[in-house]
Amino acid sequence: MRIQAPRGTRDLLPDELRIWHVVEERARELFRLHGYAEIRTPLLEATELFVRGIGEGTDLVSKEMYTFTDRGGRSLTLRPEGTASVVRAYLEHRLESGPQPVKVYYLGPMFRYERPQAGRYRQFHQLGAEVLGTQDPAADAETILIPYDLYQSLGLQGLDLRLNSIGCPNCRPRYREALLDYLRPRVERLCPSHQRNWEANPLRVLDCKSEACRAATAEAPETTAFLCEVCADHFAAVRRYLERLQVPYRVDSRLVRGLDYYTKTVFEITAESLGAQDAVAGGGRYDGLVQELGGPSVPAVGFASGLDRVILTLQRQGTDLGQARPPEVFVAAAGQGVQEAARILAFRLRRAGIAAATEYGDRSLKAQMKVAGRTGAQWVVVVGEAEWAQGQVVLREMATGAQQIVDAGQLIATLTRSREAATDGAPRR
Ligand code: HAM
Image (cartoon, rainbow, N blue to C red; front, side, top):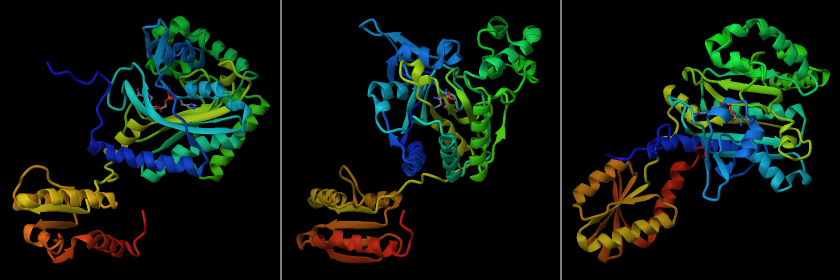
């Protein structure tokens, strides 16, 4: 039996990765424009980090973590998300004592033991950002605007941005009471698991995907009706930014998100054609998390976007992003005596920044010309024994078939000149 990739994981092959690179490069550029720098944290963390950070009662922590004991007896977990790790790194490196806010982004694999289906994997990739050290609603708006603008620039269709505010430790208890009062007479109508633990964290019931809980909470009290003045003002400011920046959104008073660390702003972005797994991004403010993880009181906000889902959506919507770029030149050897010379020439062209393909092995010139045609190279350089003896090669333009004899020493200059002539006037990419 052949060994296969573990269930819920997959290989990303070169053809597919071209579109990933387009998305990643666009994202890096957007982060640069907004003043974010990259951070890389380990794929493994102490299990405790996620239990304390994300919350023991969440599905993520109670059902979906890859946790194991290492050979030294420590409990480690493959990171299911990036926020808790960023906060740990922020505290570990005392970034709170430097200039604030700290604005970082990350890109990499996350692991969740979920039931795999299209758009849902056990190893998936997130692109995310965190802003630590500011309460300013402009930071909330920024973490919504970045994924929104990224998707717009990629041409992602059918975007739907849902926004809510779930308050802070001042106003949340009042909401929690109201929600408990609402749920009490409806407990029997909840899903089996929430019939048991609805009281421990009633907000989780609002986030439950089961039909039973959804129906039972259809008329639940709205979080926004219970906000204290500070939270209400903050929410109004976030909304003003989105409106003035023409980012369409709707307030969804049921949106509470599946992680316990959120305060105030929460949001999710979905895209058409993903079906049930349609959230391409989610995020919000988490003003209590730094303290929860042993640091001072530091307000923070961030988002993460599932790259696998963004790319799946683009593919389903028939994007033409990420076309392969052919080599500029194919170097062919006309005869065994010049094979090495042809390959050396290809190496020299590459060193000069010219993408050059050539053949391995021992193939006829005709076969090599066929390969050259398939690669889509604009030029073919034929190294013939007679010309080579004179220090010359034949340069053939594939589109027209026009040929010229060029001094080998002048080849790089000739190709560079023709490339410049071709791109003259065309917008640089
Ligand atoms: P999250 O909503 O759990 O938030 O995940 C963010 C995004 O990751 C989702 O919207 C989805 O696109 C993608 N995602 C999640 N699970 C899977 C999966 N199994 N397969 C494929 N894609 C998936 C967070 O992780 C928070 N850390 C976001 C955040 C950052 N909040 C504040 N800062």
